Length: 292
Image (cartoon, rainbow, N blue to C red; front, side, top):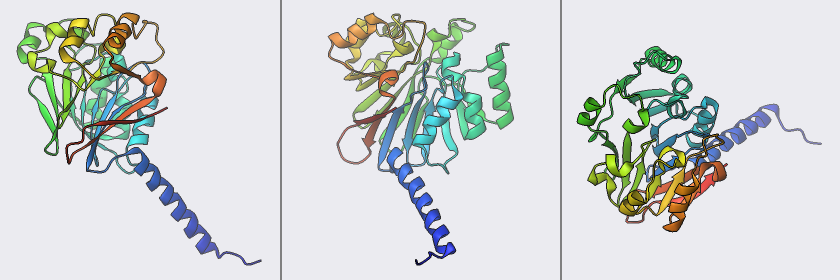
């Protein structure tokens, strides 16, 4: 029997491993001709990844560091350990709790968040993580925008500086949740954090027709009113939710979505939910798959 030379054998193994990694990466990411919007399956919490080639923006981190890093590992190349910006909508643990684990694994250029000034174990941990990794922080205010190329843009639409000043010291963080819209060509995604009564707080320009709505507060009955849905007319609604004791999502919210023929996608049922948006041509964003 002919023996395969050892050098050739090891060379073949290395090649197969390289091809496996490369092909796996190609499955889970997009080229620079596309922007990808991924609603990550991180359990009861929020974490959303906007990707364009090797550039990424993360909105919230969820609570579970292991879950977040697992999902990012599926969507980013194994050699890519940088994230351009992380937008934190508010300081509840199910939105920011995994930040220290994220910073230990990835180099983040900019954190957009309120100051973590309270003397609670969570905020002390967050302050320590920002200091340890020397991450630059800025406050997200209405009008701030981050661009992907020439046709994709993430813009903060709430809160305005005046609202923050008038509500300084407010203990209910949900009512000061950052709201941002991500627009690619004519398609708009609206990320609402845990904001209640959106129709009262959001400015008129944030109430335009929306292609995809990230349902606020995991489907809490205090958000996503009939009035708000009738104003923004989303085609699809994403429920970022996991096992919980809060009754999320509420039957009232799910019912309002069904009554209006809005397609519902849930991370607890479908896993990570992915849209792919071409930057060239007139074709809009497409829901391409879910990954458990």
